[in-house]
Image (tube, helix red, strand yellow):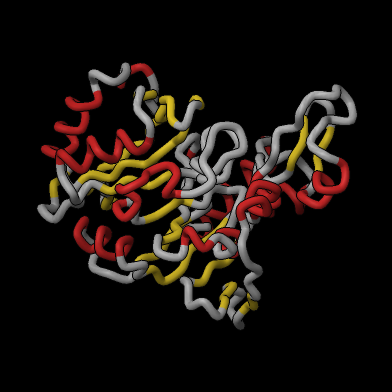
Amino acid sequence: MTDKGNGLYEFDGVSFVLGTEVNCNGQQGGRSRRVHVLILAPGLEIASLITDSLSTKGKLASDGRPTVHLTPRQLLETLLHIDDQIILIPAHVWTPWFGIFGSKSGFDSLEECFGDLKQHVLAIESGLSSDPAMNWQIPDLDNVSIVSFSDAHSAPKLGRELTKFEGELSYQGLFDDIKNQNIHSTMEFFPDEGKYHSTGHRKCGVCWSAEDVCQNGELCPVCGRKLTLGVSHRVEQLAKRHVETWKDEFGFTLAANGRPAFKSVVGLQQIVAEGLRRGVNTKGVTDLYFTLVNEFESE
């Protein structure tokens, strides 16, 4: 690994910043809150200070996404005391179980969560089950960047969502772009394909749209228990306005609000699976996928 001296590091020709995801687990507003957040650090020295500070709040080595016994606000306050260039981004903000706006243990606004530190939250990450247009309906998000990143659970899923920034390739450039919403565009998963987009019970075979929930209520018609309220319903609960969108000649979605455009895409592996009418992880799909990638050098 090579330190490029500008907050970026390089390995095998790939530049990256130092970052991690943590699970905040704490009590706030008389409720237990569990929220996933991303942390980006401007260098190894700062990253070490973060590790030292949080090591007393949880077992950091226990998991790739460790739990810290802090609320998101307490975590942000801790990070700001270390260095005000550290970036905290609430991750997959709408997912029921661990999103900052999630139906299970989330908040109704950034201010409810972060209070007087709200201005230090520069961005939110939309997650697979929502896209920027859904988030544009929330006035609370007008002054923060809406970014999209992929998870790292498996290699084929790397890059299935991404954010294209406008500024210089450095940590300071990234910080400034996020702070000033200087984003060219994002590439998105189709949100209705996301695991938590709809409301339902998987074991009961119930999958409802937001409209279905409004008509039928929040109880499962099979088992009688409360359904897991999905992203689409949760967005509708907090939405304050409707935003008209359109697509340009390149398939990017735009709106009159001037927010960065986005494009919804389907991964090559999924396209191959649909074409062959096979499961996405079957050998035939995987073999053809690698044949195509090797021939054309990229997806």
